[in-house]
Amino acid sequence: MQALKNIIRLGVKELWSLYRDPGMMILILYIFTFAIYSSATAKPDTLHMAPIAVVDEDDSRLSQRIVSAFFPPKFETPAKLSINQIDRALDSGHYTFVINIPPNFQRDILAGKKTEIQLNIDATRMSQSFSGNNYIQQIINQEVSEFLQGYRTNEAGQVAIVNRMRFNPNLEGSWFGAIMEIINNVTMLSIMLTGAALIREREHGTIEHLLVMPVTPAEIMIAKIWSMSLVVIVSTFLSLNLVVRGALDVPIEGSTLLFLVGALLHLFATTSMGIFLATIARSMPQFGMLIVLVLLPLQILSGGTTPRESMPEIIQNIMLMAPTTHFVELSQAILYRAAGFDVVWPQFLALFCIGNALFIFSLMRFRKTISQMA
Image (cartoon, rainbow, N blue to C red; front, side, top):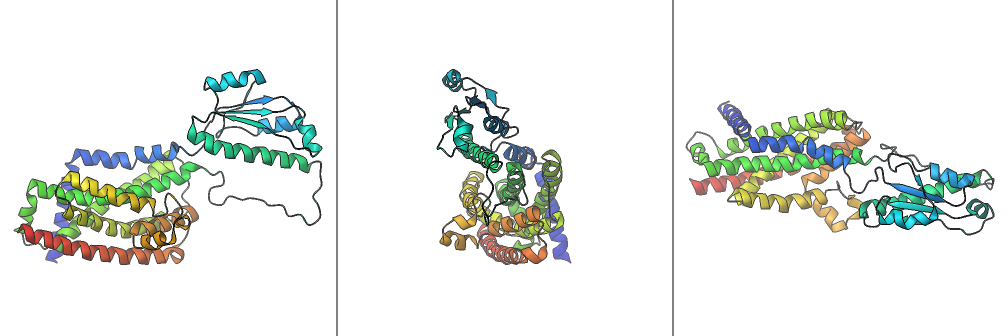
């Protein structure tokens, strides 16, 4: 009972220390509000109101159909240009894409002749030009195919492929960006807060005060873990409802409660990792450098940025030992696909085991560090 009281009181002390640190409070507010909103709405690989113009030298039913297929929010309403205005429009930077539909385009298509559409791209806008090129080709090919279906009957036995986008019908990049930013911020902030709390006590000299009190290293460590986890989990809940659901209007398909339980298991692992890093670092700048070295592989190789299936098999196997891999899997399954516990229990079990291993390892290192200070 006395140990529980010590853990609660030490945890409350950590919360008051954090409250009196305006820099950390501003950072938490920024990470779970503006950072998530800007990351979701300013994805460089997503087209949004790309300026486009069309030179329609055919002026046929098919060419008009192609022109009308470009509309907001991916493209601006196409402007009409003459062929002599193409170079000037691109040189001035008014348009990223200029499509030139040649004369007799519809007639040649119906006659089965080979014909081409010229697509002029301002390649100085790298992100838009790369993704927009693929979008435009798909749109034109789809419109031509649908147009020809009105003139040619399908052969017997021909299979028509109908695409249905599950979980994100309009392929909105903000849906993916907002959720993944929350997942990454949970990892980053949990490591940062617990490590900074320990280093702050060492720099202020208060760690020596704890050594003369009737508390154990395990109680000190558990107090830091539950207090900082509480801050992160409350911030995550508010951000998920106010920023993601509210400001960004991103639908959450699964159980928020189940996701938060998984986040707690993940926090148990990452906060332990933060304490371990703080025992290695001797100052806050050193701790910041360690965070960079640890966070980059954790976030990039966990499957949140690039699917794990596209990585080398040895990397996939190594990253199974990282808590972020399992947290990303269960978060995407719950929040995107409305998966229940019967689907994500392997990830819960993996997080529980990894968290216990990291806690024991960090506690051993923490005890050794304190014994050297005594």
